[in-house]
Image (tube, rainbow, N blue to C red; front, side):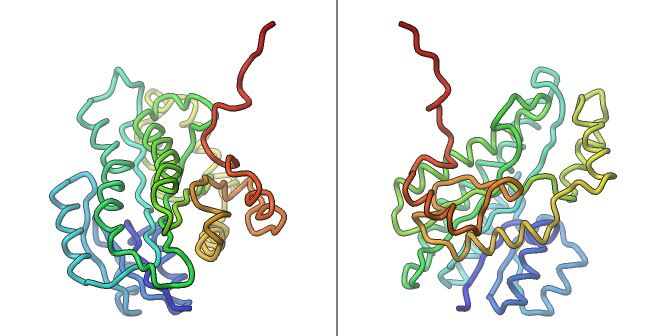
Length: 273
């Protein structure tokens, strides 16, 4: 079934891969970009439309919202692919304005678009419309030197659950893609070991050693979420690398346990007599 999909940050990396894949499947895709790329021209040739959106600039985001509203079509999937690790460094060493702008790109700006575009969701289809975000590291430990990025991703995870609880006629899901070869790692390389700490050498080794998660697997997981029932995927955070998505046994487990793959304090406590 042909769907209308909006991809925020569609001109490179994961957004570009999803755009190419879904266009090839016959879906109608409209994407946003901050900086024009050569890949955009090929996508335009396949019928894809683009709207400029700089999530660090509220006025740019608002103009993007108005232009997307002007198109006037209902969407079946709204996919958020932006990600910026900068500024890299310990919290007290950073410029706070840059730290705040990172929160705007990685969280607040995405919520601004979500809030504005949700009224344009298509509720006439047999499947509830999907809002899909991307997570990052930091759920299981303190990822030092990346506080703005980590905090934003944790906030996105919880917002998925909150939106799922409040809005029954849509699906809200967040995926952790794992280590994928994208330009997001350039921030770590620019920062160097002095600011990035141990993650600097780790990034060099990951990018050079062929250990990164294939983009094809990220795209396949997005396809799975796009087709999955609300009770299975909505409000949850999935790992592309570690979770058994696509396995019917996982679907069965998810249908019986509403707490799976959500941020929880349960199970992390001590009892004293």
